[in-house]
Image 1 (spheres, rainbow, N blue to C red):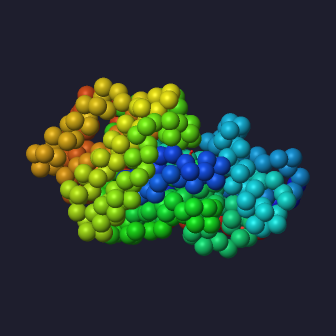
Image 2 (image 1 turned 90 degrees about the vertical axis):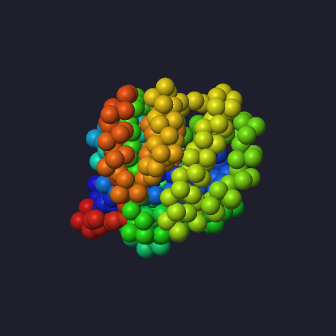
Image 3 (image 1 turned 45 degrees about the vertical axis):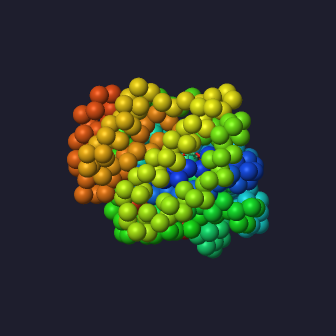
Length: 331
Ligand code: DP6
């Protein structure tokens, strides 16, 4: 077997401040609404790719184990696009490792597909700009297209493959926000995001959520640019609550509330009412993300650590873009 050059890339996950929920085109992952996120430092996925003559088909290893068929098919979708852009017919050998536990409530698909897009493009010798890498990552996982940029990022929903990609709103050093993740469950979620997106339009509330999204995006963008934490807190919590209302009223319904998350959400609201700068947001899982300025992160972490039912904390600040760490021709 001969390999054309192996490339390795490292990318970070992100936490959505304005959520992506529902697709206008599920196959291309064109979202029903735009979204905004913060890329998370510290946590990362490292993925290496080589296009190898003689492999019968793509070989995908995740955390040392062969990937499940569904995950492998998503990886091949991204690789197929790279092969067609580069004119490479060969299958790929893909090896991916996360630095953080996949069941810890941080979406690993975002960092995984961002790293895959960068490593595959580099291994194929493609010199793609960040927006094109963002479009490539989007084919594997929607939220991954935001992890192509560091700091504060907006996914412009677009109307076709060419117009749906992310842009940076502000670099990581613009605002030192911290995401304190309260892990309340380590069990893998029963229903994944892709299935959740398919159900979104069955909720009578989804149309209103999507219609008003531009207003929430504008408010969030402004709060970030002006570093206005209380404005950010209000819009981020409202947007998260709206998505969870859509989930709860979908058919069949999806409910990611547990007594601990509910209690913690109420606690965050009352802590903020008494002067602590903190806000919550929750993705498609039970764990709760607590956002705060770095100056409040110690106090927030202390309160969360001693909160009944919280198993552990992960703490991340604004992270940078992916890095291609190794690209060579030795195979
Ligand atoms: C609730 O990007 O994980 O985290 O495109 O099917 O991989 P797929 O979905 P995914 O959905 C993310 C949903 C969310 C909100 C968000 O990150 O914007």
